[in-house]
Image 1 (cartoon, helix red, strand yellow):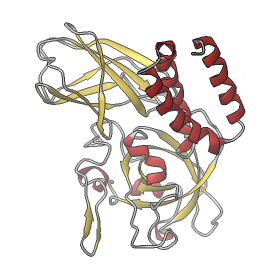
Image 2 (cartoon, one colour; image 1 turned 60 degrees about the horizontal axis):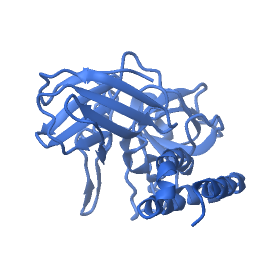
Image 3 (cartoon, helix red, strand yellow; image 1 turned 90 degrees about the vertical axis):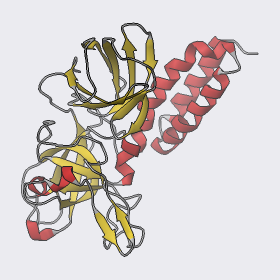
Length: 312
């Protein structure tokens, strides 16, 4: 069996050769992560580096979903709007879409943020198409956006929006005529007030240029504890920096650190019994940075309460 040093050398040579092609890098980041995970179960020489690669590929895989945080290149997409003049429809019913017998609805939005006013997201928000949503892991990401290449409908300037919802595909309509959120299109369904800052109302749909930017937040990361005993469902909001949370660990005052599972949107699940314990959290964003909030939740916490921790 080759040594762990030799294996590391081979792996990094592979990474270097693949870095010249984003397409192959995305494939590598997904497939090789599974290989390392399986190998770690059988070869003790790889266990020491398995956790490192898990974090590495977490960052690399973000390149596969329409631009990663820290990449300043402008990308092309399209934007429409929904939710009414006050954007209330973006948070009460999420995305609501009817076509014959088909209906897609998500109370509070697909990210689970609920009332976007009280959560601090306001009306500068967007529902992302499948190509951008990343199964909910893009929730909380911030995008700078401007209307381009359509002088009749575009307005000058740019806006920064936060991803708070999902725009579902409609395979019954073609991509260029109603199926705006179908893969592989990079599409933003903006809250109406946001859309009207970059385009005219009658435009309907406009071409845009967009890029990931830092999320600027006031205060710390917020943890809302829902669920019940043995099913702790923690909603994570108000995340600065990259904005999108990709991994969370929780620690009770009587336990060690335990990885949480992504349930839906930015709701993270722990099946441990944590009642009557102070709680600490480690939150890792898509850029690989981790912030630890020690004892952010006091011993006497109750389900339904929200607590504030540290910030990126």
